[in-house]
Image (cartoon, rainbow, N blue to C red; front, side, top):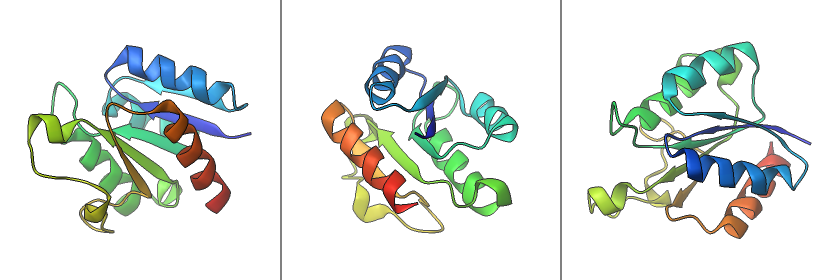
Amino acid sequence: MAYILIVDDDEDFASTAAIVLQKEGHDIKIELSTDDAEKSMEDKTPDLVVLDVMFPEDDSAGFELARLMRHKNEKLKKVPILMLTAINTKFPLGFGSKDIDEDWLPVADFLEKPVDFEVLRHKVSALLSES
């Protein structure tokens, strides 16, 4: 199947998501920081990235990594990104898929935490079939 990189500082969530996606036959790697994810993607290009927004070092690190992938790295430019976040619980801005934009939020789809893992499985499958 596909090689999926999960980038999330919540190790419990990332491990559970990995189990769900591994049951679908995918090869999964987890990175707990955007810096480690960037290095990991240089070593092996993922078929899809499941990316959190907020990290302890920076509440918008996921946004920055998505922009870097789209605008500064030719190898990662077309890798689908499924963005996950709990940003609306910390900053009630009504942030959602309506905000997807090629410059500001260059992701393929968006899921709000807490994530329904069946929905995650379905969205990953749909994104992989589109790419």
